[in-house]
Length: 263
Ligand code: PGA
Image (tube, rainbow, N blue to C red; front, top):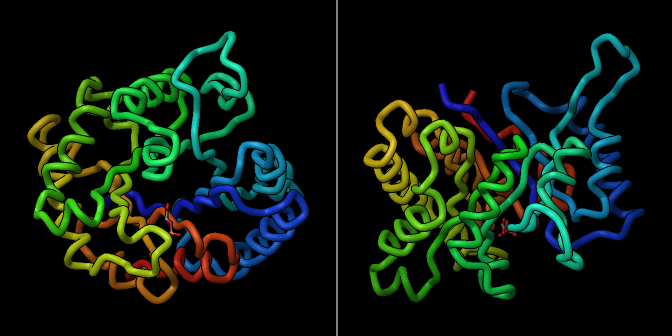
C-alpha cells in the first residue's frame, strides 16, 4: 500500500490572526472528523506562520503520547546553503525549526519568479541534505496540452529536476502533478486525464529507478481539487492524494478532501 497524503498550499494568503483561526478550526475538525488516521496531512503556510503552525500541530495534554494532527511544510526554500543571500531562507533553517516538508518547483514560482529545473534540482538537494521531504511539482501549460506535448513537458521537468538523484534520495520525495491550466481556475483535470499522467510519471520513475521505487513513490494531484472532485481523483490507481490550494483555506473543505479516499 502506498502512502496517502493531502497537503494544503496556502500560497500568499491569510493574516496572522486569520491563520491562527484557520489552524484552530483545522485542529478541531481533524480531531473530530478525520476518518482515516493513515492519511498524512500536511499544512504549508507562509514561512512567517510556520512556527505557529508547528506549535498548534500537536495536542500535548498527555505529554507521554502527544497527538499530532498534521505536519508542517513551507512553499519554497533557497537553493543555497547559507550566507549573503538577502531575503532567503535555507533548508538548514527549516530543519532547525522541525519543518518536515517543502513544496518545490510550483508553477507559480516557475512563472512569476523564473524558477528553472536546475534550481529545482539544487533546492531538492538542499532539502534532502537536511532531511526535509520535497514535494516537487510538475505540470504542463494549457498550450502544451492543446499541442499534445504534455508528456514531453512533464518528462523533461522530472528528468532535469530529479533524475540526477541517487535512488535512496529519490525514494524520499513526493511528486505533485499540477496541470497549470487547472490551478486556481476551477477547471479540474478529469480523473482519467490525471490518472493517465500519473501512470506516465510512475512509468518514467520505473525506467530510471526500477519497479520498487516506482511502486512506492507518492504522486499527488493538484489543480482545483476540491471536496466535490477529490473522491473520483483519489479513487484512481496512481493518484495518492492531493496538493490543495484554494480549498485548503477552509478547514471544513480541507478535511472533506482528507476524507475522500476510498474506504
Ligand atoms: P488550487 O491550487 O487548488 O487553488 O487550484 C493548487 C496548487 O497550486 O497547489
